[in-house]
Image (tube, rainbow, N blue to C red; front, side, top):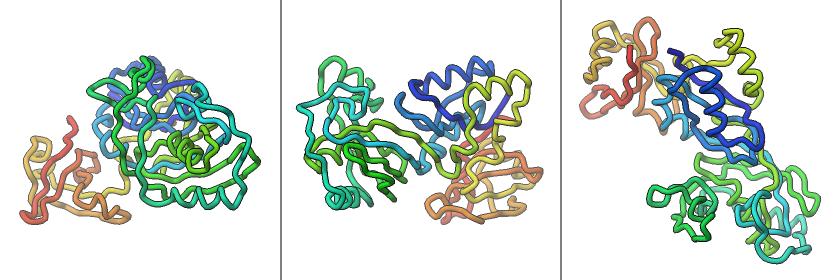
Length: 304
């Protein structure tokens, strides 16, 4: 079975699920999924895991995102983007550049967002967009997100070209809508491209047509990133033979079974979660380190 991850360049007008279904047919594999939804309007980096790598979803989905795009002032829409119906009258009183810069800067840092009513956010097990299509108002809860950078790349009224670096879970459509509300002129997202997810960038993303061509030639290594290279920011340990067998059976592992360790480049937020390898370098899974008891508790164990 193929195991690993593909960095896909999602085309416009495709849902993330469309891309998954397309690759499932190409690769003839059932176990496949994406790690973070991109709206149909958006293009760019979409991480798709296959085989046992799908079990890393909770960790891959937490990575920060970078976007470039365009916001159009003067008209809010019900979906917060150009694919939705207009809300209210059109406004031609566009913000001055100084006013715009002050408003943009106010969104940097930790902020609270309401997900768009037309989103995949679940309400009692049902996607919010299904309720919104029925004319209902989904009862959405606010979420805390972090905007690391919100940069103005170009402003030619009514259009603002921007770059945003943000935490996982940020809705760029909501950011556009809220900016329009703050400026009093209304706004919606007119273009969006995800240029990076964590360290994975658009330069290494494969268009679906290219993946199909390479898969037809059986050149899977050209576009599938092996399991062992995933989550490189997490600290790692290599277990001896006895420790490796015990880990694969779900047993907790003492420090005496660790052959070597590496915390180079490890994120402080993930220091208690370790990648576990055999001495030969096979990725066995993930474990949480219990600092008090000094042992590793298996969290994700891959089948041999």
